[in-house]
Length: 202
Image (cartoon, rainbow, N blue to C red; front, side):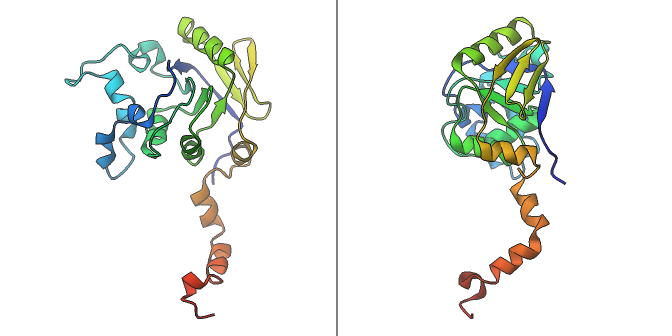
């Protein structure tokens, strides 16, 4: 059964900068793998490591952020190609939700389909959150999809999420594949009415 997602609680990691595209999130050379299982290992690979594997100065390489389950990003996050590997790498790294100023529409849709909410907030809110978690990495962040708020300690900020996506999380219908399988009889009935399925015999 697809889980209902109404609240995400955890520590957060700040990813600074705007227009971070999917190639930076997951470099193209990793797309040749036939499963998503190892994608978490490649998250921000070129930004995190030198060619010889030496770690760079990056938030995800910082000990205090290694257990973060929420990512706070800037504007137009996930732009570029529509590769599903980008949200897969984020989820498989251990990130359960992302808060940003804005997201690429396709990227946000791909995140929704794997159960990772992408909530938006104002530029000032993003700046306040990033400053807070940079200074105090152990701050507990709570994203509440019911009240449409994010809290950082005792501070609360409004967030937004398209109604259709919010509804899919709070009702547990975000997994479209699981939804189709749970209604397989209806799917077959509809398919049997389609001429390009039945070979124009009806």
